[in-house]
Length: 425
Image (cartoon, rainbow, N blue to C red; front, side, top):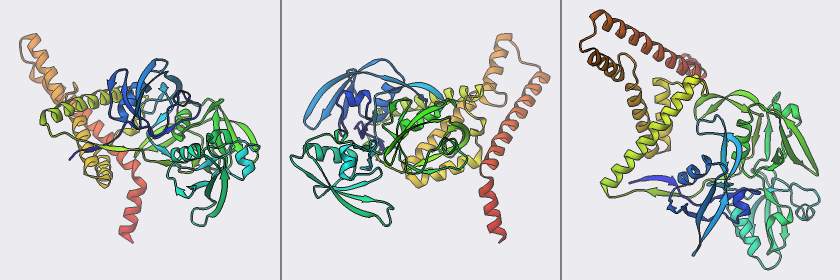
């Protein structure tokens, strides 16, 4: 028994990032941060994202070797936990791995002259299969002579198979090869990207002069732009372009909820692989209880922060959901496994428990306020006052429930219509 969680093992390192400059590499394990032992990737993100500009000391394990790394946390415009624009810290470390899909940003690079093209998919290196970009780079760097590379090019269902050769013992970037982290697969018509001239097959290599080392970094940059025009550097079959693209605010489905978010209207090739996971478990019930208390506290703080953003309008009120949304989220979680399902049920239970403690008439929190007032005035409230308070509470709760139910219906209207049409047919 236990819960699978992302381990503190680096899946990919963004080019041009503080982590890349410090020499960190895919496969490195982050063993400690500022002297405190870490096990999970969430601990790494927590130490980095909320502390832009600070210095951080890492203990890194690479094979049998363990060594310290001290570096400054970078700062960039992105989004916070609730996907609202914010300045966030970054090192360029990612838990996910990068598929060995090639990017060739310069037409006169050695790789381009050897015949490589953006979008080529590496299958084998010296006859050995490679699954991710880290393995591809390591095999080439550790080779002592010319390295045969087997590629696939074109549609996945009918690929062209190509054999090329790279010099061994050198970094891939020195040959003009980078991971194709944002290779445009499709451009939505009438979108910001379409009007700016972005085309399918374009390789996005930089934004505002900063290298794009991860699809998620690019996505966060767009989300955090607040509509500001971005200078997007593109490599397109022999030419380098810089296109001004102004993201637009669009209603977007994020994890099953509707949010207004900035988008440019492109879909990228899927070049991401899952990172390393480990089982979080303990046989000591006291330790398990302590972890449960800590996680409950973290969820409570996160919920209250989200509630504040909901009240201030930083998060769309369309995210309020009712029984239909609860059922939908639970069903989706159940398909991912019992552990995910239990996590969602726990999260829902905690949220309902916190709501019940809010100072709203008819809820336990509202009753506590009434008892406090009666204690301060050393006497019960009048029957008329109590009745008025209860009526206000009922109206408020019915309004919230109605609003949540309306969101449920509007969010799933197309599904309801399709279900009804099939039922009638």
